[in-house]
Image (tube, rainbow, N blue to C red):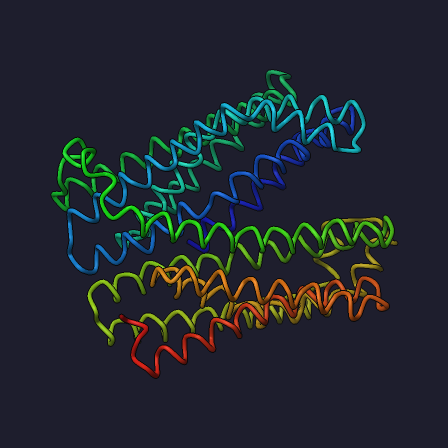
Length: 423
């Protein structure tokens, strides 16, 4: 999952490189604007993957084949429902957002063009969340890895073919992403079908009549994770927009460092995904020893990876910054704030791991509440230290990551000691 997750930000770099070599800057601006709108929309619906992983893993651990099959059916029906709603409303959503945007007319035009095409990937993109979560829940990490890699490779190849080869520009980039999402869906369905046959799960048609069974738990968990995602999106969006108020060179430096933070986040999410699957299975089986082994093993390897990242940013930070930008002023600004990034891996690893633990345990309320507290701390720290400018922003982000981990750690230790975590 770490390997597959890292391909996601790399895909963004390839998209930027392909579009960025066209003759006008507004092509890249349009793809960036339209792509951000799509990414934020789909990312907010990422609860479909997380809830599916936890519920499927618990059913798998309990060896409840009917419930395991039902989790997938419920998840896919919910994903298709959200996708249908999005497709019905996407024109109005696009008009409203681009009307509020201060971008140039050319950037708006190409942004809307990109968004209008990418919107049709919604059924595949949201269904892929469910397939990824369900396959992870069945303790199969290789299938999701190949599912993501195949989708991203398809996107990269078609990007080059459509944009550079056929000259379709922004429309080509959008179409490449749509086809890539459906290629990932096709491969994911094949993997699910194989697992379904191997586990001898009930016929999907026989489950449609009882698809509403116990769905309240599914909806409640999705609600809690969605609210958690809203808080997370609020902090990262504020980081971007507030950074812009500190000047062009500072916002550019923040963009460079944030690209590294995204690499940390996607990499650590791989450990969180693994934790979700293993913790969910152990809880479903009510096996405390298996849970202990999962926790110790994942904590150890995530600590090793975070130590490597810390050393890399501390020792090679300057060289890494220079790879991203060759503008001297931006390089100098990024170096000023680099120490905050050096401190980030070891601080942030705990929130990713505990997120995985609690989502695997399907304890959405705890994840939601700790995220809300951490978000409040983020804004409080920033406004209390605002006189320090951009340093205040990075201090607030570091505090946010720390408080997410501390909040869930306190709850976990309390429930573990009272032996209520497995309940």
